[in-house]
Amino acid sequence: MTTSPDPAARWTPSFGAWPDTGGTRFRVWAPAAREVHLAIERTGHPDSERPLTRADDGTFGGWMPDLGPGTRYWYRLDGGPPLPDPASRFQPDGVHGPSQVVDPHAYRWSDDPWPGATLDRASIYELHVGTFSPEGTFDGVTARLPALRDLGVTIVELMPVADFAGDRNWGYDGVCLFAPARGYGRPDDLRRLVDEAHRLGLAVMLDVVYNHLGPDGAYVSAYSPEFFTTRHRSPWGKGVNLDGPGSAHVRQFLVDNALHWVEEYHVDGLRLDATHALADDSPTHVVAELAARVHARPGRRRLVVAEDHRNLAVMVRPAAEGGWGLDAVWADDFHHQMRRRLAGDHDGYYADFTGTTADLATTIRQGWFFCGQHSTYLGEARGTDPAGVPPHRFVVCVQNHDQIGNRAFGERLHHQIDLAAWRAAVALLLLAPETPLLFMGQEWAATTPFLYFTDHNEDLGRLVTAGRRREFGRFAAFADPGVREQIPDPQARETFEASRLAWAEREAGAHAATWRLHQRLLALRRDEPALAPGTPFEVAALDAGTVALAFGAPDAAGLTVVARLAGAGRVEVPVRRRGDGAARPDEVVLTTEDPAFSPDPRPPAVDLGAGRVLLRFDGPAAVVLR
Image (cartoon, rainbow, N blue to C red; front, side, top):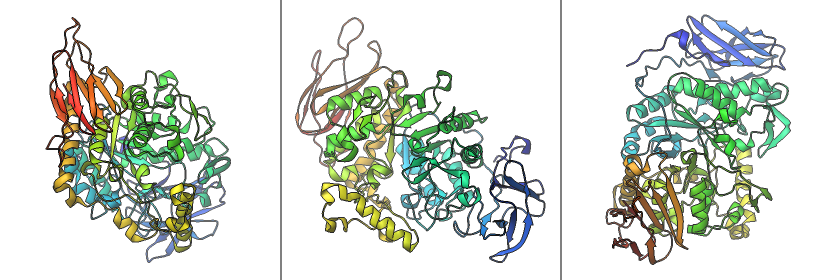
């Protein structure tokens, strides 16, 4: 096992409480306060108080030689009520209780050889800690990491774990951005999860939310009224102050949070939630600054990925080319085209998408579909030209937490379409040149939904429940108030429990077959020479129901994926030829309707005649040819 690093080489936080040799340092930004006292908790309430020293920049700090890890404390501003630390590393009694000093260097890491994360041949597995396992904890995830290793994914992405009010939440209502949710375990439990993932060869990414704070327990405004601004608005109200007076400390707070997860928990990357809601008119956007600071840390490779619906190529272009320098961005157009094609969705933003195989092929070729065209849904132009951006910088999916959980009943795509079409879509997803993302349970076609759930106080909870049902009123299917009343109550515990994966499912029948398909396709993605990063590819619609994706230069071994997404029919596949014009022989690597992958196999007939490849489909399926 490794020992703690040389103290001189350690990262030093800007905010919070951090143990140092012989004591603990405290620092908080409270520019509107005249005085701040550190209140020590020993019997369930503040027992003693010590003044902190004000600096010219509005921060208060102090060195306490007699306080160490485990100390519980509050801050008291100008004689007001005791408040938890905005940069608390742990909230053992909840977000309204005292903060606790945590020594991040006490954990004995064993991951020194780990090189860090890369998107080369990567596949991402998104999960929610509370519903991923029966335990609903960090330890529950750790115990099932071998299953994810055996599946063949390379990056485990945790939905937000910053502590929130109540016992259950998606994580996007976090208010203690530096403190792992106490319901999931203690800080060292999260460290153990990351350590074990690295031992198994898995990278770990963490979803972080900087565009807003949750509605209950967010005390940062009590310390720093300048944290939010009316100069910018967001879907949650005031915007985060990234470019006005006091913004330097706000930006540092967010960057510090990112570095804290990287340094104190060894995570391999961050997924930044809804960066389109981070309005910043300063010369360097905070997202670009954060990415540069994370990438500049010595040692391992670390990733910064953004969720952003604007389709801005500048975000993933290198800083040297005037870009923001992010490693990747979520590209939802692939999902929207697939969902329109397979399930027929046309409300809301789906109105912008046709779902035709021609448009799907264009989306795969470019990385996203909208490159500046007018969006009917937005009422304005959307997107920029991504020419030259490597495909792996686009993260694509056929389902994720939002695209399932934001549906009224939390239905997964495979709950609503023919499973043969689902298997064909999965083949296209996992063998596409973009970086695929899976959502927990899709690898065995889980029967469980993923619903929207919360655990707010009674008054706020009633508003959340009513708002959830009201928002669906604009959809024709929910025009009847009686139908809206059937939407599961986010506040009900059974809504949360219904979303918990049933792991026993994956052992038998169609679930086991679906798991084998995902495993086989991920193995191809990892090992097939023709799928190496940078390999040339072509994609085309062969007819109204079929897309073909071919990898490889003419003088090299190649791989072709033919995905029939709807109906039966006969398809002739263009034959790859060598440089001398001779037709290259083909072999069938797999079909998604092989008996190993389908409980009711209907594999297409494959005719590898001289100079041609003819496929006869009885229904949706995908064929992989080498």
